[in-house]
Length: 270
Image 1 (cartoon, rainbow, N blue to C red):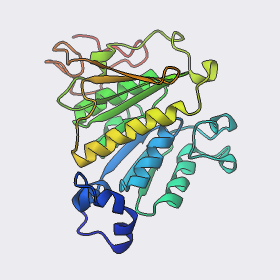
Image 2: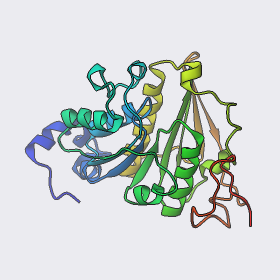
Image 3: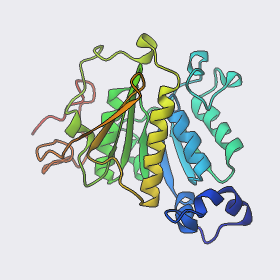
């Protein structure tokens, strides 16, 4: 853990430090924190922005896409000058301008079975901002094996959801045992998305990540938070760990080998 905060850091993080729930020790925890952010798009942008501003010392950013003009309506860490550039590089430049305390590790790739355990295992926690079910299931399974918490978020048109998956709690497969059939859940390119929606859900994800690093408050473990921007309403639904869950149940997985992430992302019983 960092031995002390210098005068610049005491000034930068002063509004954290004066809080009893954070203080200098809490800020040191943030500065020593290692968070892996999956996706530098709509949800990833506010997550990256606020974790960097909070002083999370190491941000790993995983994304294999490039910035497009249609992204700029909601992906607020990118701008016109970044069009055509890898999103991880654009996001890294944004963080560099925002907070020199933060070390960004860029991974211009898609998280998959071949790299998931290595990337997740090197982090304290994962913020899942992925826009596809395959990645969500790979993240869930790899994080469960590595014993790392995951802050999950998803958005659709005017609606969003968030939950936190902790190692000793229910996992994503307890909520959704398998992925929906291809084509039944359209993406934002087909249906659109309210530009400010990922800002709300992404800020909730960033809040959960900070709380986990600080070991403060109650995370959204076992609770799925729904947000409806049209009604400006929030609803929380509780869910429990399933003893027969193929990922976190009594006979949970110990390896990603042999799991088929193409057909419903199912884990077949032996």
